[in-house]
Amino acid sequence: MVNSEQNIEIIWRAFELRPEPVPTLPPDGEYLHRVWNSSVYPMAESLGIVMKLPPIQPRSLLAHEVAHWARTSGKFEEMNAAIFRAFFERGEDIGDIEILISLASKLNLETDSLRRALENREFETSVIADEKEAEMIGLGGVPAFVANRKFALSGVQTVENLKMLVKRVRDSK
Image (cartoon, rainbow, N blue to C red; front, side):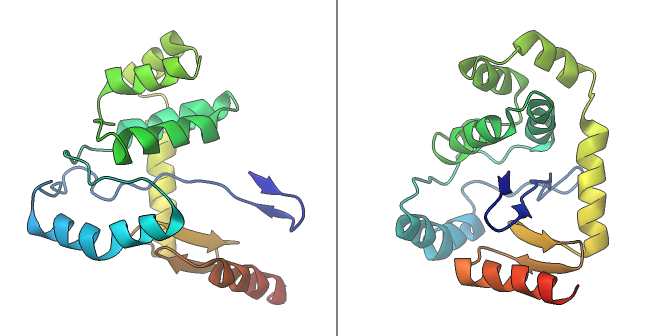
């Protein structure tokens, strides 16, 4: 996504919060409920976003592979949004190939091609490369905003903070 007015390009990268073998969090555990009640729900409400604590905590590697695959068709933004809605609005298992194929189908994407790509793990190395880059930069959570691989902000940010990040990069040139 490019913001031509500001000459800013936004590139989404893959980042698994809990990649194998890190255990996933129990969906009914105290930690997730506390964080969602104290931070996620109030923030979502203030932004007018519908979000529900998902009843499952799947691995997200395949979902990231699907996003990389969709990028090759110029449909990254649509697929990424569909994955987010499936997980955060409907609580669907975005680690399940059939659910991911169904999401692609609803977007009229080529599901046979997607199935082959997932079964052959064609985009796994791309996802891992994104994660290694995040590790080299020192990122440990999402969302994260990185500018020119030099400056980073972690966590949900205000528009003002993001503008300051862009200004900092431009001033450093």
